[in-house]
Image 1 (cartoon, helix red, strand yellow):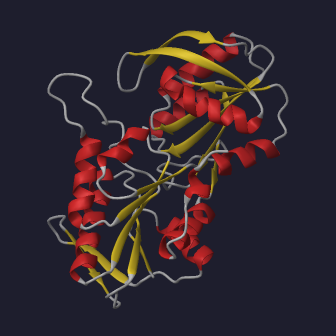
Image 2 (image 1 turned 135 degrees about the horizontal axis):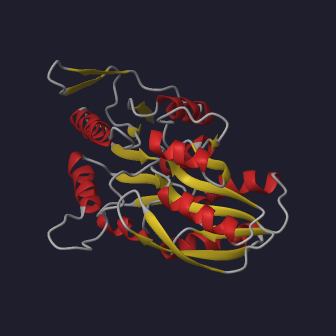
Amino acid sequence: MKLISGTAHPELSKKISEVIGQSLTKIEVKRFPDGEIFVKILENIRGHDVFIVQPTSPPGNDNLMELLILMDACRRASAKRIICVLPYYGYARQDRKDQPRVPITAKLVANLLTTAGASRVLTVDLHSQQIQGFFDIPVDHLYGSPVIVSYLKSLELDNLVVVSPDTGGTKMAYAYAQLLNADIAIVAKNRTSATEVDVISVVGDVEGCNAVLVDDMTTTAGTLCAASKVLKEKGAKSVRAAVSHCLLNEDGMTRIRESAISHVVTTDSVPPLVDEGDMVTRLTLSNLLGDAILRIHNYQSVTSLFRIH
């Protein structure tokens, strides 16, 4: 087995290497003056299972292209299997044709990964489950919820209610509610733009409760902050957010600080893009991903890792 880290998230790759007891394979990655990416693998990988850790987080286009080039280098170096470890799968929001003349970019990315030589994909909390069907190769879809739920339980919050910030996240909120033995509520919203939403109503009782908003990803935090405002208006005692992939930019962090959200808990599927201070707690996925990598390499079942009990 060989473990390769792209430049997108070397900290997570190092943690995974410590978990599985496998040092990172030495590679060279550099940019030409015109921005083109060059990679060279500095160790023999012929006949090996090669795991490439590279979330396609911002800058998404550069990180995706680097991943494709790494895969092509591995394929031409006669790797036995190439497994893409994508803690965060970029372009996942574009998973359907919901208006005229738009692409389904999540499918395009799946095609690119397969064509570049991926034998299988290991990822965490896809934006929508159907993205697995975009691939003609095996996809191991893990969940970050066990890591986040363990942290939330350690807070020992009483009168806990899990809130979905929109109707599309109801299934995810229900899973969290089951694991936390908590009630569930839903915020109905109307998106006015890519960064702005209008909250219509709240389904469920949140008065006097400690509310936890759960979502798979956030960048500008428009949905979370709008939901937190209406939850406070409905009498919620406190509001926290639990997000699988936290890609907060400067505008998003400003919104969070000015909102009713007291704290955000997330995973280290992507590196922080801005200074988050004490507002955000990042929990590592290294143990989860490391265990999955070992199981894939040894042809063992991964079911127990991605099934939510």
